[in-house]
Length: 249
Image (cartoon, rainbow, N blue to C red):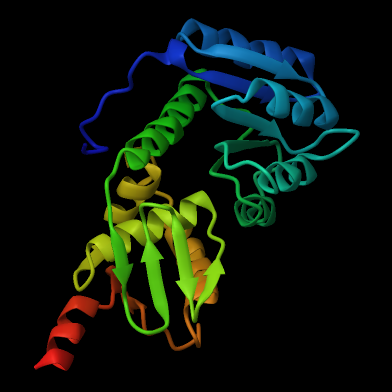
């Protein structure tokens, strides 16, 4: 299924958890999501949010950063210890450090307050769409070389015989790079495939997550052998199939 051409299916199938200590903000978000057909749960502090995640198993979480008891970053960290549910951070600051911190902790996206209802619903649908589309892909075991092995069917990555934990977005990015091994994938193409077409103006996402992958996969991240930068264009995963064929000749 092509992410660019796919349409969003029945929103009533999805449950969204909204976490914010401002009840008016929660109600505002809830009304707009429900108008679009989503089922919405609410939590007004971090502890209630964690309990709701455990008991209600939402399909996506909208998580405010600034909360009085446990801030959104700490809630996200605790969620990521046990759950890969998509999380969109809500922040009033919009500062680069906050965005990067949220992404580093495993957030799938962020939206800066104030935001329009249309923007928020669009981001929610984009994250759900790419998560659903990617889960439907059928892929096999890939042995890149003696160091790196990827079992896409089990979502496992092994480096030098040790399992490496990847976050969902890191995994999606790796999949699309490996799928196009030997070919250059532009920033725009990767943004569309991994994050959704709504994110074509967010190139820093790709750079940030390529750095994450290099730190986890490369022997020397400063001199990468797997994920190669094509300056001004994008990234290319080493053509391991061609290298293997040369070795066999």
